[in-house]
Image 1 (spheres, rainbow, N blue to C red):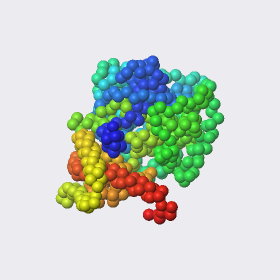
Image 2 (spheres, one colour; image 1 turned 120 degrees about the horizontal axis):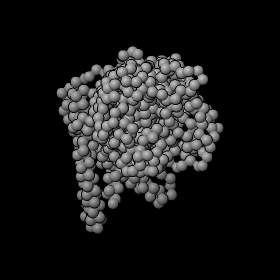
Image 3 (tube, one colour; image 1 turned 90 degrees about the vertical axis):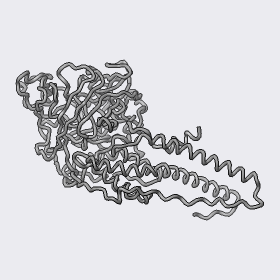
Image 4 (cartoon, helix red, strand yellow; image 1 turned 60 degrees about the vertical axis):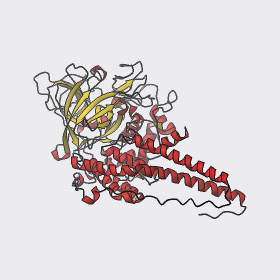
Length: 586
């Protein structure tokens, strides 16, 4: 049992799956509050392995994760939008998020039939083609379509779908008679050119399909750099109001007070003031970083429930400080709107695991997620990540447009040669003197043999786990972060990969070149349009293979050093108890 405990503490995880993700679509809560909630509850679609679809997100719930494959995705890897988005929610009533209702001021329309492969006319995309990356993704849904209402997923804003689809969103181009509140009416029937949407919040397939079913989408991914988003300004379109107003149509959930809204707004002001954030982008990043700061909040799928009559948002933010993605994203959204920054609640899934053989992302119910989108004039909706789950991280954007494409540097012959870690000098046990007691020798031999046995078992366990070799750069980088933690390499909020890689390299000089190379490649994968080339990915795998050869020794050595430090402390404490004179500091 002790051996297993030690192995648990030092072994890296077998999988990078996000159990954090069970989040929203998550599994199983009797209250179906998320568009893709996998549930065992009594709500729509209840039952293990099913996806109960609802068009609301309610913070404050508790989840129990149930693993279940939802879909497989193949196509271009999303660089600046690392999610599979399903639905955009903008109506907040203090308790839950839902789709915007259609009102006189906010005419929400539905285009019932957009032809297969037809371009969806919309005004919320960047007009400058240099500001977007066009990509194509194919989704194979494993679950029955009725469990998601045949929602069309994507990795960014959808331009077209290869099947007939129904589109829903704000459409101010369709006039409404004075004095009449528009219902959610269909516009433009068959063989009629669809009107232009100001922005789109949901798309689903029009025709009936059976699982498994497949569709391909063409998407526009904004590829803005940091300096561009900082200078985007606040010249918002006329339709943006519902994304700035805190409550949709001033509708507030009954039975709950809104008295703490002012405190939330004051907290948002305090955060951005402390960060000297003056632009919407800087303010959004300041709030995002505030939630991600280590020790401020606790990520958990089972947060304590709010007392009766207390809004879950208020209880999470000011009292429990415990929650998961829908809690963090809701709090960030409400803060942003209090600052006059347009935002909305997104629901969908994280990327999942990449299968190198099939070249597909395998998306599990555990990858379900909720995040924030902020609107920037000229660039559209940009994602932000406020949940400290150690899986879904904020997007690392390049500082300037010139860094969007980082030139490739071929590996040199020297960098291709493995460099072994130098062996530690043999420990001189020292010969036993003639007056040494035999029991002491025997006791030392038993202790040494036991220690060697433990190390041998740990080595076998490590080797077995590493048979599942990681081959994509994000998971390679997570392994390096784990190694850094074992070696007590300092990590700071806002570190770039190069900064952390440089510190880690200084702890393992024989692997300096490999570590720094992987840091550079990880940066390219995050920043460059199109990610790594095949040659660069092969280079990353070679570098990781060399590091893997020394990984076990490094981790075991770190563990052994920790034990030694513990023995030194114990010895000093024991000496101090026998010696009345104070010991000197070392």
